[in-house]
Each structure stands twice: as structure tokens, then as C-alpha cells.
Length: 282
Image (cartoon, rainbow, N blue to C red; front, side):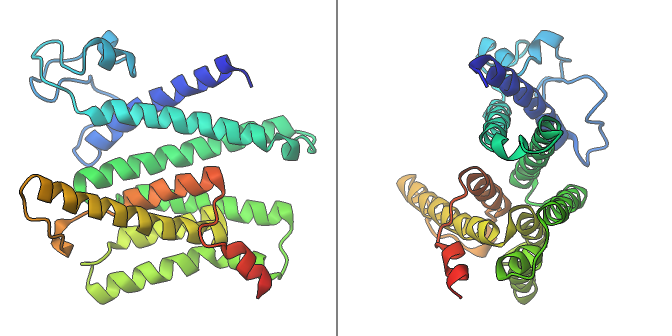
């Protein structure tokens, strides 16, 4: 694929990111994400079409509302870039795996369909992450949709590849249960103080999407990222002269760490503890 193709895909991703911003902002407010004019969150002025161009409008307006001059949240711009980068990453991944698809009669169609599938899944995960950061909760319809799509992908891959009773296949088919149970037990044991049940459902979907080795790697990596983030928060609070102590009431959402780790593992296939080789040796 050439640069221009990737640029088109990035623009498509940025447009989807713009919609995700609207979806996360309006969900559960009684407002429709697909109808109704957008307006400034501060002064309420309806926005013109040229104020809604993904990335471009934010840059041209210097991140401010043209009417009242209020600075717009940087997350709008960041989500559009993030989604664009994810779309390009998915396209590059599909291109990398093209030799596998080329062996099928309709290989190009399958490759495109899987691009659409993964683009939708990661758009959904970005929406979940954004909403969890804002409201400290994962919407059930979104996480259930993610679980359904992940289970569909798992069953489809097992069907196409041919399921065997080898240890690796058995672990992959059960990965969603294996990853779900520890989170569910932590949630039950702590009465929801240590981990949310939404995180357990998210881990279930991650296990089905990535399989056992990659799914477990994503969970471990999420805890590492969360630990680094927590240490960073402690140091930042102390630098600002505030209390650096973090407690369970500090309410740091864990879903963003899970989603970031899932994306890292999906694109890099990193095996953080060499889990795959350990399974082979058992």
C-alpha cells in the first residue's frame, strides 16, 4: 500500500473518531448521537459545518470556540488522532498478513472484511475507554457488543483453522473464561472496591479476541501500565504539594489500561512473559 492509501485510511479513522467523541458525550443523556446539531459546550452556539472538520477545525481554531473563545477539551483532538492511527495500524497489519489471505479464492474480500471488523472493534474499545474515563463506568450495551464480536471471531477462527484438542487450542477456546474469572472473583471479594464488574466483562471479551497467550499478556501489561501510571500520579501530586497517597477511593479507571494493552499486544504480538513457549514445554 502506498502513502496516499494510508492517508485516506487515517482520514477515515479521524472521522470515526469525531463520531466517537459525540457518542461518548451524548450517550445516556437523552440526546441522539446521529441527529441534532453540534454546539459549543460552554456558550451553546450551534457549530457550522466548517467547525466540525476532524483535526483541521481544531487546529485552525487553535483549539477554541470561534464564538466565545473557550478552549475545547484536548481529548476531542486526541481521540481523532488515536482512531486514525489505529485504522492505519489495522490496515498495515492486514497488509502484513496478505500472504495468508492470498491463498483463498476471495482473499482480498476476506482481508477487507477483517479490516472493517477490527476497525469497528477498536472504535468500540476507544468509545468504552473514553466513556470510562469520563464517567467511571463501562456501558453494558457496548461491552456486551464487544464480547459478542470477540466470541464470533474466536469461533470463526477455530472453524476456519480447524479445532484440535491440543493444549494451545483448548486454552484459546477457554481464554475468555480464564481471564474473566480472576476479575470476577476480585470484584466479588472486594464488593466492587478493587475492580469493577465491567472490567471483568471487558477481560472476557479480550480473552475471546486475542486468545490465551496474547490475552494474558494484555492483562499483565495492563497491570504494568496501571502501576506506572499510579506511580506517576503519586510523584505528580507530591510535586504539586498535594497528598501523594493513592487509595481505592482514588477511582482510577482500569478499562483504559486494559484497552491500551490490548492494542499493543494486537499490533505487536508481544508475549510479555514468554507464555507461549512455557505452554509448549508443559
